[in-house]
Figure (cartoon, rainbow, N blue to C red):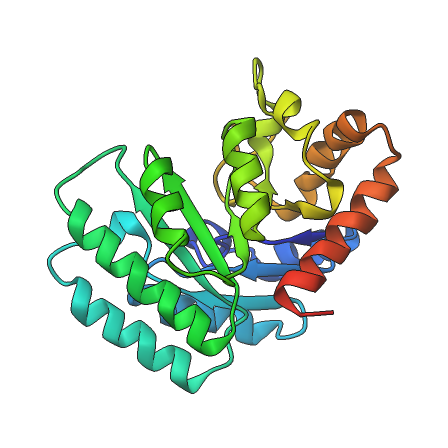
Length: 252
């Protein structure tokens, strides 16, 4: 399994980091992508990924919730980092109107700039979208040929169809295991070759670990539900989602 989205540079992991990594490997996790969220995380992501360079892979970007008055200087720091190191992707980037709409226009500008970076550098993007689907889709249409993953996808069949036609993958995590989740019905129309596993660690732990620190090895519970959705064995979900991740992020 490949975890395509885990914030394991978070302080929650640092006290037992080596033991944590060992537990993920023992459980069959092959790789983990660690996305950045702001200028400060450039250093923290680089630090953890440098410890296990064949297992942890860094991404860099300015998360929409981190877009404030200093957004231009943050982008400059992140852009400089992208020029000096071969990041696996541009992300986590996107739009988020859930908590605060103060910087909506700035969020859109920041997103456009980072999507342009991705095209210029031939990198996939990791897209965050919350209460902003229409605007996200509108902006993505301005960048044809871009590929990436719609992180923590919980949208409708209509949104899924649009994203698939754009060439995007859908990141599926712990929310699939939550009670009353309707995502399973949506995924019934999504080809398995467009599904990626992710955790969003330390958040969004699946049942039966909900409320605890999330870990990549918990993806097995998501894979088990996906095996029900697609009516295939769990090892088929593992093989397919791993191949999908390798194709998108490592171009294999």
